[in-house]
Image 1 (tube, rainbow, N blue to C red):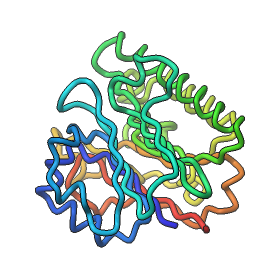
Image 2 (tube, rainbow, N blue to C red):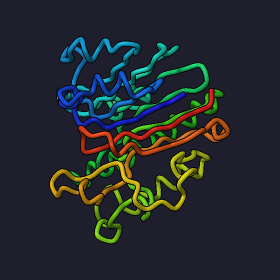
Image 3 (cartoon, rainbow, N blue to C red):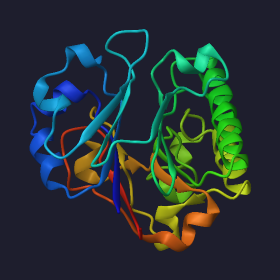
Length: 256
């Protein structure tokens, strides 16, 4: 089973860049999108009815902002939008939870904390809510795949210029500490299972500085799994040849 996660930075923008054809030919069983920036009623039939896929959408109260979507070649057994813990986390359209035969899939667009201190604190509260929700699902006996744009580069190996960005949200020690905490609960960064020492593997590059051309990037996009799924992991990759956004897709293959 092949899963892909991609922050598209606007679904209608990538539609114009060949998204539908890419999805039809990428070979994925499930594709999770973040930062779709659109409500379902704003989308073309071409996006809503892609051959071979069932699509599920979650949008926020604010138009043209945030949003997540999951395309799957089988309809999920159940769908939840949000954590159901507090409206502050569920009203921005950042969380889409779909249940499949072998696992529960969490497609999450974690907040960016760079705007100001208030948004940084919101991001940190969101992180804790995500962990609480994941632990609730695990306590109910569910195996988890948690993918999306986490908006934090975990370690120095995950960012091209760590020293220059140590005081920038997305690489603050307090954000990276939460990633450490997340892993301390047993959640596994699948990419690092295969590439523990790789230093040039990034999934986001700034448009403003043509950083992608020089591979001056950050690894912000992840597939984490709960530990009982580790034996099912076949491969993981960053698909940096796929264009159309300031992020590139990341991929996970599971043996089911």
